[in-house]
Image (cartoon, rainbow, N blue to C red; front, side, top):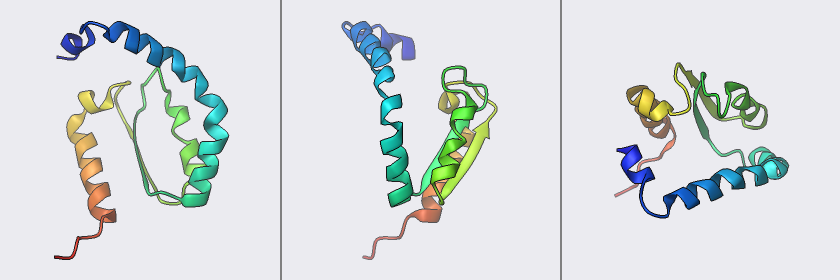
Amino acid sequence: MDQLFLERPGNEEIQLALFYSYGTNPPLYPQWQEYFRKYQPPTLIVWGKNDHIFPAEGAYPYQRDLNDVEFHLLDTGHFALEEDGDASANHITQFLASRLQPIPV
């Protein structure tokens, strides 16, 4: 299914532009880290420990800047949601249930 959508007309250019834009991210890291330290958003990290594109070492620094961080390394690669969707969904469901307040009716 993924391949079907990747082969849509014009998508190759979109994917290449996205790939090349990744280089603009590292200079922004200090701003993002400052935001995390200042606002402390509750954060769920579900990361593939065998991800060769974004290695697991990149997940740990979030714990330095965030106080309310739930951290899970799955035995997956880059596509953790596809490789272990049940575990990912369970982590997301539990994280949201533990932090969302019911809406008064």
